[in-house]
Figure 1 (tube, rainbow, N blue to C red):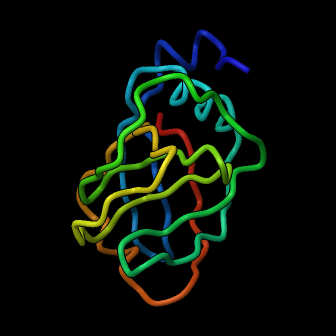
Figure 2 (tube, rainbow, N blue to C red):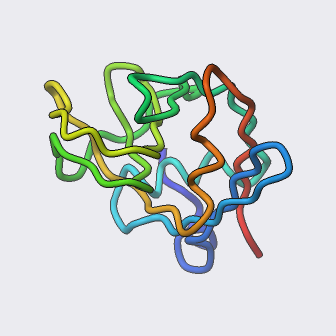
Figure 3 (cartoon, one colour):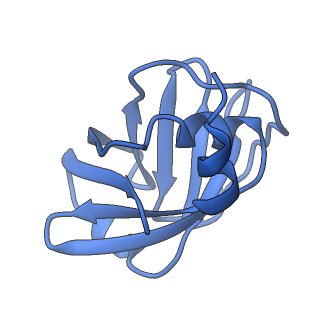
Length: 131
């Protein structure tokens, strides 16, 4: 499913609400990011679980496009799609580990504030389009 053209053209920034903290992020160009955007005309609330003390991840309501470059590396602040999940992950700590096959598709990058995810256990994250 492709995002509506008005979403593709005008909205590339999202806001993640983690408790009282706000993290802003910019989505990349590409089919996976556009498909993720198609879920966001409304607010998306996810319970994100912790994985290896480096990322928060959650299953998306549906799979999104697997078009785009797959990578086995990441940086702090990366927002990535892991197709087998179908999961979205946000990396808050770099530990040097390689992401196993099939790798992830980077769909965005968080600005400041990603440290709000650095808490033990799961947490609720609200993702919404920014005006």
